[in-house]
Length: 385
Image (cartoon, rainbow, N blue to C red; front, side, top):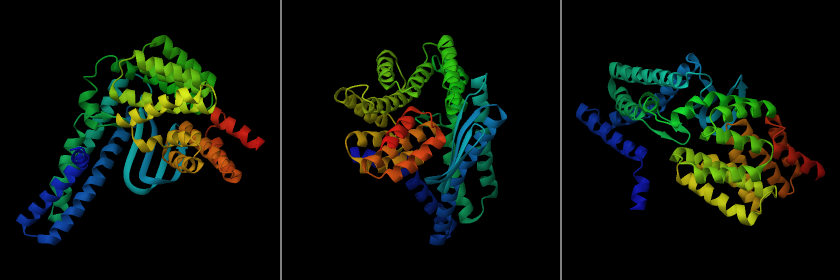
């Protein structure tokens, strides 16, 4: 039963049903095997293009209505190039078949701005579906039509999981959101300013923004995340771990928020053990369990490659740590997290007695955040070596 459930995932079911529909449709139309092939190709084009169109609509809406665009990632697999334009990091990857973005609040009214951005995304997708109905001719066009119509309906379904929010959730879930989630959204601009200050290496300004957030919303999960991030930015990993453990015990977190919190606890636990701030025998089992639970709650496993690399390093497996840290640094879009992964990569190379590669990895980390505690500490270790 478990294996059956593993295979019956939404994309597998949609693919099987879609191919059956194309085959039936082209059989009725009389175009045979050639029509089926063109229809399948059209369906593939629709599956690739519609998500890009809705994402472009979301980016346009975010720009129009004053949201912060943190990341834009074009493509998948290995990264080719990355640069920053203002507050936005743009990344180009090897396989140009998808478009991803990270968008967040920047100024009030937060909920209205997010809803309007979602509306632009929905209108862009609906316009693409309408165009496919209007222009559909021949097997290829019918394949596009059979793909984009149900896919757009799926995108309009309210769904919010780790690292992913559907257009339908912005349209229908966001307006009906209850407390404390509404307050979490309203607190977003202050949390964003703390994050931007940290990206600039201005820890004092980040702390000032966090203090304002604590004064305005002391009970929120966003406030706790900022407090923990400030502890990490000062290298106080043990205190950050204890703070998060207490927060998890006291708060009633939604599944999505819990996955983020557990992922953070795993990373901080490993950092505390590495720095000798907490006994490894005590903190590593807790951090391993947090890592496993975060994935079980839906956090993408590949996004935790850097965290797994640090665990491999603590378990005296520098080869595996090197492999995982390189994956983490390549896929991580946050400059601070990417710098941390490069610091892990440098330490893994040092453990393999390859100081030349360690210096190369450290140089990449210092381009991003030379002041970050693990980057700074890695520089000291490498200088001694």
